[in-house]
Image 1: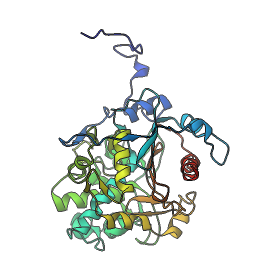
Image 2 (image 1 turned 90 degrees about the vertical axis):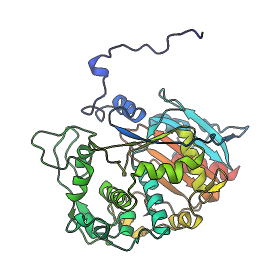
Image 3 (image 1 turned 180 degrees about the vertical axis):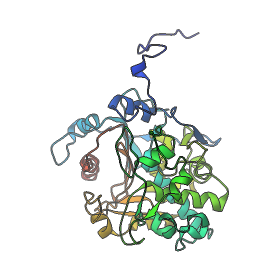
Length: 394
């Protein structure tokens, strides 16, 4: 029998100040880290990995020394990772892992919150349904969900929702985390408690139905969660399956993933399409490699190649440049992916607190960053770019 040894000293039961709850997970770096590492605060649905053996990741003999790679501001990539509260970081180049490291007690087999990087998975599902003729992207969402007639989100087409071109407004709610348009969805998903005298949506369907028109759909880029949640509702209405099931059937069970992924649910069991997925670093690297290979991975074409090609073409750069995401100079947003339009053909799935799945086709590179960064800067992209440029020169 293996002996049991002490590791990090923990107190059972924990001190009150060490307990992470829905009231305090967003109030400190320490609590946010625990929230990102653990899915225990909210109910979740399993995205099964399937019964096949995991695909083996190949590791390069010579691993990158990130302390010796500096960005254009002179900061080393390793210093950047530490400064931005990185939990796990992996770089693949030419099909091989050239760097993999875990921080802050995060383990390779633990799932990590993807937050809005979840949107990119939903974009693939919607694109595939359209490709199979089950969905017309040029029809309004209210065509598929008649209940949305007269709402802000019901007036946009499926393609406009995919590209975040349906500007809407929501009820503002006063909470411990401030007042703002993003707040009601945290209440609707059950991620934070209701404030006193709150009279807004308490589940994702009511959140979508509460949307009000702000501008004419198709005339402005407006990045927010309700548009992806609307896509999730359309997909469920058409297929009779939840988002977790579809990601499992179409993507996860075919990758040869090592671990199950998870999907956060609201209080009535609705998948959080806009930001509820959790997965491990290595499995996200496998997903990134699949995208890099134009949908082909593990001996099969998981996503049709032309769907990936459409993503890489990108969307309207002028709309994004005129939005509150203008700091992403030269970028566009298309089919729930961020497109950089750089010399490496880069595109990414990005999530709150600095989650990144970056694919650089012309540099043969995939980078995955999982973080618990409470206050990310709008310009935290230099380090990944520095790695890509370094690898291209080697």
